Length: 617
Image (tube, rainbow, N blue to C red; front, top):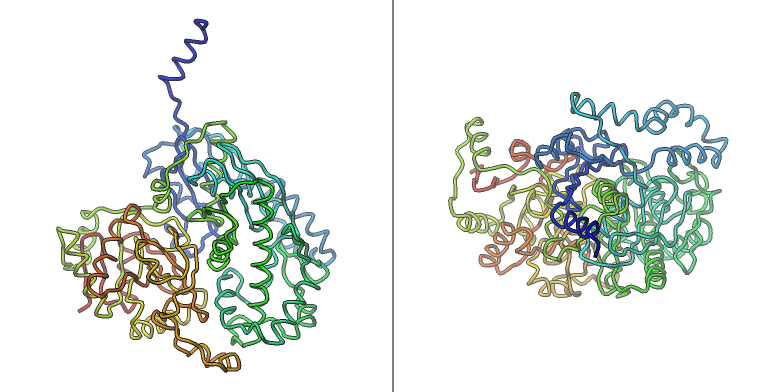
């Protein structure tokens, strides 16, 4: 071995260059920032946690400040800032979409052009100006851009416990791609197949959400579909119409929209309302309008179509890669029923869903893709136990900070030096039917609460059901609460083996926990169906006996696991209702003062802040 080579190897062994990257997603549904060091996510947060605007898409100045404060980094230490999509290809798609929809898109084009130019065409300059507003005296940090679907794929694969896996992204278009099948191996992600705008499964699904006035709240389609009648003539007609007139599904999972029945606005595919009314025989639902059985049958038809398309894509991914493991990301990866169906199909031995598979998670993916692919850095595959902590990356607060706030508010809480005593007291209250706010540790960076910012209750309690509906019945975008279950006890309640560490799966409850529907149930009017008892856990159960599940593991959220165990001792029930800790239309409570504000606004019985308990009694 030459002296020069030996010297190089010794330097490489003893000197390790630390690479610090800040990932950003912004200007879509949810803005976020994430800090990554040497391929490991150190901190991440949504901008809504700091602006207090739900689903805030604006530049994530607050989230960036948090990431730097949490890590202790100065701007001078950053090697790069990476935005989660490429602006020029996206701007090109926006312009070309005008031509696709001509002449209908020109008026919209004239209205939106100034914003497009400032936010898309000159995005790099705009971002640099906004960053200088955060650190005016700091150096100019190199700014890079990742492809949108690569950011989504990296968010799933590089944070997974897999050395290699098939990767599927089903999302809206960042630049042009709407669906990606790729193979992830080590520190590489290689695209194998794609579907491009204006076609794609997520676009079709969003168009139906738009037609039923559920845009931005696509989970409502799955909720409505549970009331649909698969034996009805309407359902069969709607299902066939979707296949024949709207979207041609191929065996490989590719899907082409029949564009004469759609309009393209601001780069989004939306229904042609007049044509859809002719096709389906019903007008689009108005915002705030009543739901009907026909709406439910239409929702069931698109759910079935979407389910079939997803399974075709999964089969194609398995065939192309030959790998038994799957990473799934993008907008449709937030769909608990589809994810559950994919698990039940058994096409893959293991499936990984990142805690934040949507737009906000693109901040993590952008940083990870730059580190591994842009900088050619090797990847250390994390164990399943390490992956469990990936959803808890936000702000946390000490007992000292909380006590100071409570003193300022002239509140006299009960303090528990022994956390086990706090769990026992909270469990007793829950078993008595109380509704409790629960605030612990780091805020979740996930689509659903993981037991650190949660509203908790006994899911069996009819009184809690009524109180919950009274407070949130006006919040139509709110999904049904999750059932948080001790992972070791999940088989007591659900028909399929469960591992749902981030609450992204829906699963069927065992028959003994569901109320059998009468023989004539399908003929009932929708109002009567919605009033029908849903079984042992009515607050969290869909009409067809499915529930969103969060399997609680002692390694990930030990405080929440200890509370669930204490509740099991009190009630012989291993599950709690787990809803986001926030008021109607508000983002998740991020700080103790947010939790106190929600506690005072809502009809809650008690609030737990770390080791403190406040009661309204």
